[in-house]
Amino acid sequence: DTGVSQNPRHKITKRGQNVTFRCDPISEHNRLYWYRQTLGQGPEFLTYFQNEAQLEKSRLLSDRFSAERPKGSFSTLEIQRTEQGDSAMYLCASSQTLGQRNTIYFGEGSWLTVV
Amino acid sequence: AQTVTQSQPEMSVQEAETVTLSCTYDTSESDYYLFWYKQPPSRQMILVIRQEAYKQQNATENRFSVNFQKAAKSFSLKISDSQLGDAAMYFCAYRDGGSQGNLIFGKGTKLSVKP
Image 1 (cartoon, chains in turn orange, green):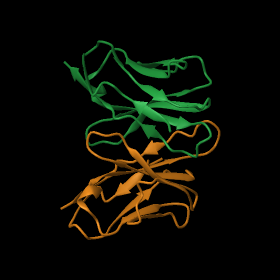
Image 2: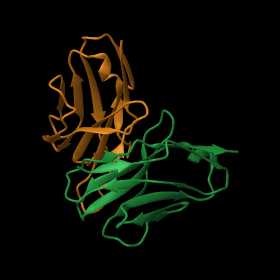
Image 3: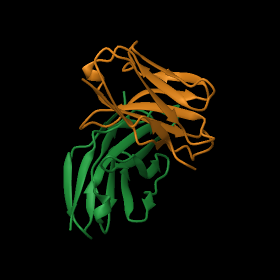
């Protein structure tokens, strides 16, 4: 069990550029989540997948954000035309659906700074 | 909508002493889960303890225990015999029992441990 892996860990980009983050969940976890966390705040839910299906999206996920999980394994989160307000840590998490052991495990996050 | 409130932005405890972190939540659901997550500086968020709402017995994990008051919608975390490694941000989180996974977090409490 290697844990939830995210990359890149840090990304600095100019306003208006596109960025993409990748998340590799814990193997055999069929659920995958994306959260956003800004300084001094708790994580805020963005979206989640069960296998390859995106089942829920937050209102925080504007049209500039798109997430995919094409084969039900890794996921990508793309932000188009970045804005300074997008600067945050993007957290990926995963879990199983079996029984009550559906604890959500988090990755170390990907820090985005938009300049 | 469900909300989670952590009223203590910062707390401090002497090493080996006991500290209690507060959390209240609001929900109209009867089936839900509550969690405490720990986020050390620049490190990933890890689960400290979880509580199922239908269980009357308070959860305990080694030095960590909770005081779950369902009627009062209160879920405090007690850390006994505090250690330097306990210093971190602590987040209280809520999840509907029927939800597909959306965790709702409080704003966190920063815990400092004094040697």
